[in-house]
Length: 471
Picture 1 (cartoon, rainbow, N blue to C red):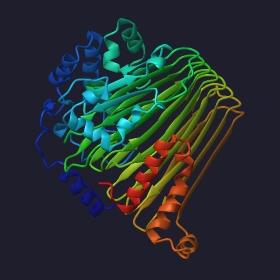
Picture 2: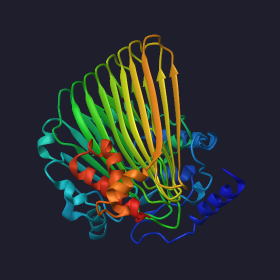
Picture 3: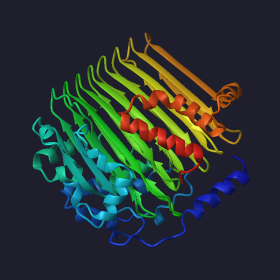
Picture 4: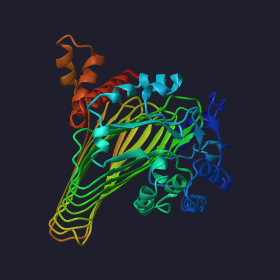
């Protein structure tokens, strides 16, 4: 990037910090990061002493660790201007009608009340730093499945012990600066426990809305799927556009036991003033399966690389993702896989789309350890640039230390062919409609992995991006 371009990016970043007043009825702590703020967050949540100690140690690490240098520049993100805790003007509800009208209206415009339909086993909705709604079908509870806010689960001695055993063990505070930040100021999120042998017929869903200006959202999701169990968990994220920078630095920790299967689907539609620095990680035991389905839209800058650690023999990872980067966006996405046992396998298939000068980077890391004999890895990424302004990069890394493995990587970058456009337009289809049809076809491998309603949502997001309507 030349000096002029760096100056332009810096001007954009600084302009995001025009200060605006807080939302009526919300409680906001002071901006910045101090031990006093961390203690206040912990006290508001009435946490056990070990969690406060964890927060304070994480804060120390945050101040010691350098800013990550592997992705796009985040020099415009100034934590002195970010509020780490915003309490919405309501307590958590278990029935939708009890949620305050203004918050309910926000989620209704996003389609959340439709989450009450029978095909979902349970629903949670977080607004800023706290859950405002959570419900689970009685029939699911009778199977022994636990789905609650993680803070609520901490109040139960049985679940507190399990949370303490697993919390930030996959994503440790010393992983990187924003993992430490998360450990210090995390708030809200979900706890899911699926007992051995329980196979969920319908998915659970959690939806996160960061509505406050100049704030951060730091939810923590912890899921444990016991031996032989099966779960599909869906996560949706969104935020309105402001003229101030917002930050998302959540964490997702997934534990997949022997013979278990977990599909984790995400549609992230953050606004273009958002720095999305999320961390997701899964560990898989013998014969276990982790499936990631990821759709990344919005965000001013994005770092998103879900990681799978295949510790069990015959364990499997599948990652299917799509990223759409438009004007003013620099999205650095991909995945990491560690094959750490024999007969493991990983399959990665990603799509990237850039338009209007957007920058989209696919970044992958595959480590095949000495233990992973007779394993297989296939990584494929395809990028589609829709104009001459946009940019797409592929940065793969493969570290193979075993002798008898099959490892492959393929990448392609292209544009919409003139012959295809001519064919469609000669049939009476407008240029804009033709472009959208082609992009939807390009994204089909991802959308077909989602439940119908979410596939429709993703296709609508692509249409809005193509029209330049998403702010």
